[in-house]
Image 1 (cartoon, helix red, strand yellow):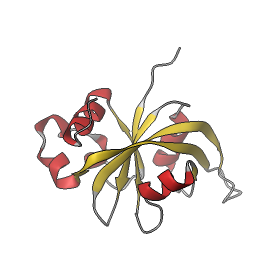
Image 2 (cartoon, one colour):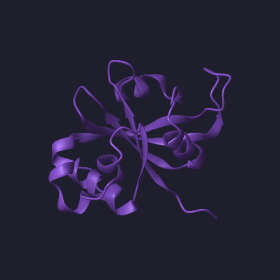
Image 3 (tube, helix red, strand yellow):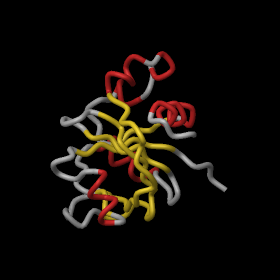
Image 4 (cartoon, helix red, strand yellow):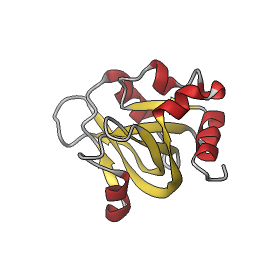
Length: 139
């Protein structure tokens, strides 16, 4: 059995917020047009957990989502792009800001800081747990 992986997905809250995901119950994570981010989507498996990051406005991890459908053809394009479906798991009690992530020594190598233009990045299990703890959720 494959080991669960962890991810960070970015969305501008005015386009699609974590609150909207909670209201919708699930969504298709589509529109990714970067090959590295697309490959990350293709590596996701049902049950993988994603930190939901509000980019541009807020710049903070605000919740956790779960992959509910593995990668499939993104219906918003005829080209070779993929999407996944995600569902909300829980909101963090306290958003974890980009500045807090940058300041935490144990998160110095988190992929989102090195690959900051990517909308989907891998997160290690240890990094995932640290961010949950910072957000006042027991990991």
